[in-house]
Image 1 (spheres, rainbow, N blue to C red):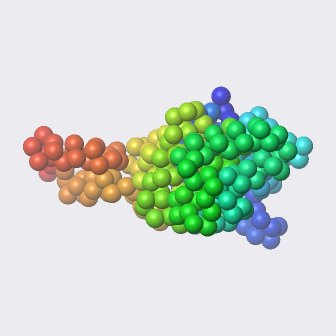
Image 2: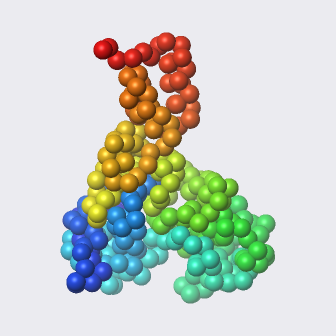
Image 3: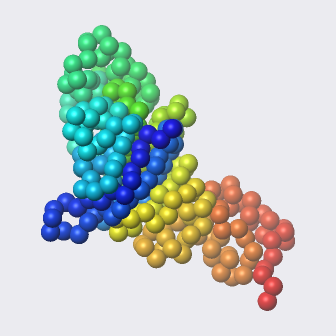
Length: 283
């Protein structure tokens, strides 16, 4: 069942500017983990902002969880169903105490106190931050702050979690913490849409969508997308290091597969190469 259906949507920020999105069509099924890649200005973040009604398409049709984003009467319901996490965790944290910050949105929604307490407790447990419930938010690391921001969204019990470059300002440890949380929710059935510029993060998704100049350039599994390395390089994107190594070996004439993403896959191919099970192309 589709939770996001975009059909030929276009958008520009003002009448005298070029369109940021151009005739974009994309369907996301319930429970999918979709990563969206693209260089700066490709339209990926603008598309993400459409998913909970921050931006409204100028043309086309966009439905989220069966609700029409262009219908103002549906926007409040959409924003409860689609949780949005942004790049800088410091811009999302409101309260000075962790549990109060997680409860902030629930208070605004008028959730009864007893239910609110239970939701906050469950959300903090979900991101493994229960032991920080009474800590000061300013004392948290970047990764911990982003997990608290995610907990605040989870407490609202959304159907879809959209994250716009949530690890861009984090160190490797913080990035790993956030990705671990996302995989946990995905395994539990949540739909995850991750906007990222880290190739290793995108490689962990079920599916990758590549945007360029407001249009969808590629859409498929990580193995399919990254074997189009030449096309990705031509628009200023990288590929995982394992994939790049396969392309370099192929350039030297070795008959290695191109659809290699992980270190384990790479090691397996190199073992075959060193054992002579993979040779060079016939001259």
